[in-house]
Length: 179
Image (cartoon, rainbow, N blue to C red; front, side, top):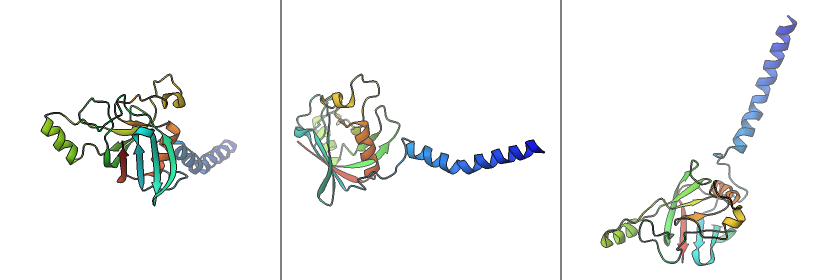
C-alpha cells in the first residue's frame, strides 16, 4: 500500500510538471515563432553598398544589422551562379527552419521582370535567394564572418539577429534591396 501511494505521488508530480516542461521546450525550440522584442515589422530594407539591413515599422528604423553578401555584390543578380544579390522590391514569402545555414527566410526572387530578362538573354535567373544565419561548419566567429562577403548571393546575418528577424516578420513582408 505504501508503494502505491509513492507511485501515485510520483505520477501526480510528473503530471503537474508537464505544462512547465512543455512551455520551456517551446521557448527554447528553434522553430518557436514567438514575436521578438521588436514586435512585428512591416518592411526590410537592404542597402548593399553599405552592407546594412534595416528592419522598419511605419517608416521608422527599429534595428539595423551588418550583413554579408555574395562575393560579387555590385549590380543586380542576372543569372544563376553569378554570386550577386538581386536588387528591387521582393517579398519574404516563407520561412525555412531546416536550412543548411542557421534558419532561412526566402526572398521571392526571381520575379516576372527577372524571369523576362533572363529568358531574353537565354540564361537561368537562378533562385533560392535567402536571408539566413551563419554556416554551422565555419571556423569563424559570427562577428568575423560578417566582415566578409561569403554567400553565393544570399544575405547573411548572425544567428542572434536571425532569431530576432524570425520573430519579427510574417510571410508576405516586403523587402527592398538597393545598390
